[in-house]
Image (cartoon, rainbow, N blue to C red; front, side):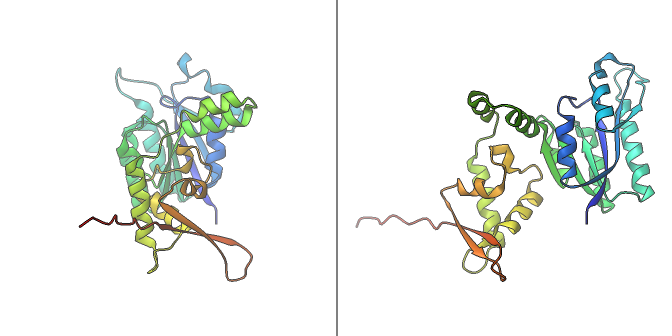
Amino acid sequence: MDLNLAVLIDGDNIPSAYVKEMMEEVAKYGNPTIKRIYGDWTNPRLNKWKTVLLENAITPIQQYGYTQGKNATDSAMIIDAMDILYSGKVNGFCLVSSDSDFTRLATRLREAGMKVFGIGEKKTPNPFIVACDRFIYIEILKNQAQEDTSDITEEKTKSKSDYDKITAKDLRLIATTIDAVADDDGWAFLGDVGSLLQKKQPNFDSRNYGFQKLTPLISSIPSIEIERREDARGRNKLVYVKTKVKKRSKTKK
């Protein structure tokens, strides 16, 4: 069953350029029944948002900055989120911001049984990221948009440089996750691996490394074996993975 999602956007803290891609991403996880963006719309800095709001049916919420140095937008968004929570109209939230001030909100919503998705830039502080069930970087959506609209190989190659490299820490995370859900023979169903990876690290996403899906990412790692098996009906191929056992080098006597 699709989740009914409330999408709340911090207009002061998020660029407007890829809002279409953001909404397409949100649609993968549920039905965005409530879509609101918060900011001081008398501020010329938010003018870029006005056109895309109409195109994506997002409701602007006016919030004046009453006090210098205080972010009134955060408070308005938090209050609205709690009102929506108690209304019982949704069973999930998408918080679009790179601001750590929403960490407690994400935690509180999850405590109430809500599914919480976060979208923000890579500069987003880690406490907010781990407070969400899943966190998606805007830079991923930016790269996808550039690749979809570009037929020039050089531009596609250039965008690849924006992707993260798989580090030794990433490899350890993947290996320990495989081992945690593996059977007695060391094989693990990739779907279970992906689910546990997401729980361990909400911002884990194969697209961060330039792969659209988890399977090609895992296939690119030499230390992991992949096996495709038919399901009970013989209709679908199920992907199983296993960490390769390192051969011990023989020591000369």
